Image (cartoon, rainbow, N blue to C red; front, side, top):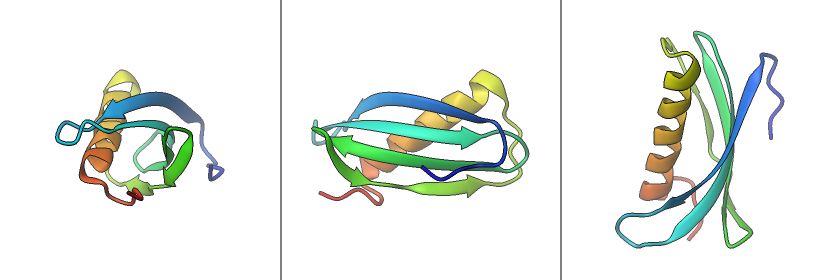
Length: 86
């Protein structure tokens, strides 16, 4: 994953698409602060399917609220297949 200058938080989780029922595993690292940089790896059955990343500007979330936002964002990316190889 991309090195980030600020303190980073890492999450490993799994998400099952609501429409297709496919299950993906993901690892996401993100920084905190007004600008949040995040970088993820998405796998299906151990095969790397995508490495989405981005930046959230004008962030107002901290702690658990930021974590919930990042998890929801990642699950939305997986659900829509954005940057995820089929």
